[in-house]
Length: 328
Image (cartoon, rainbow, N blue to C red):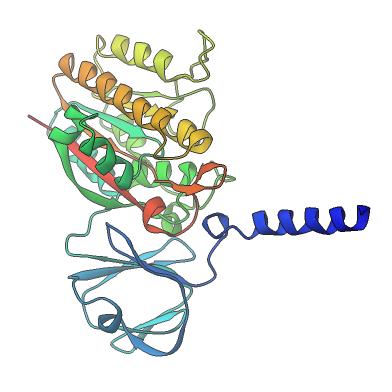
């Protein structure tokens, strides 16, 4: 009997280890802003992309190093290598098919453009907020502010985790250039938007949670959970309201609560969706007291697991996020 129980225990553990939603794919994920077309795809023979999916204008080839190459020509796949007009792209982990390519790296250029024009800008990083969550929250009429200023879907970076996404947003570069590939890296190889503000004698503030995510040119203002509610977003929101009274050219706010609840409950759970509704209210209130532009951009999305939610793999739910701009 003891031996039988031991075998059953081993089988249960193995089943959990091989949960499809929690494993890293060895092949290529081919996806659009709406869905995965192919997962863990390895072409055993020459396979043209048009045979898999016809309706796209361009493709973003995402490599294991985090590099993104945009191609508009016909291409084919052999193994995990993509061939475009005789040029080969190896170690591809994802192919994003789109008619209108945008990336979270665009946020850097948008911030810079506002600052160059002597316009103030507030950027809000919505940690772990996927395009799928946005669509569901919009359907439920939870996010009237965000819905009004939604611009388009955008591609996150590989690996889709906070350090890499945050670095991409503030540098305008992918991990292959800025050097931040995963959660273990804090130092960037290129300058960020905060260095730009210092060079132009402009004032900037970085409002962060309870830990320093990246080493940036200005020190973040950290927050602790004063009221014991399990997060720092409410304290951060209060700090942001005070920052609006200052003379800042750039206010950068990093809300963590959507990601936290997504991990605990799942990305589409009622608790997570209700929190997204609260964040929309926070941002709307901040906008009423801010006379500059507002950029809202997530670092990555999230997929469902048997225990809640996770992210870090090249799949549509992790890689595609919503992008917002209010400049009226």
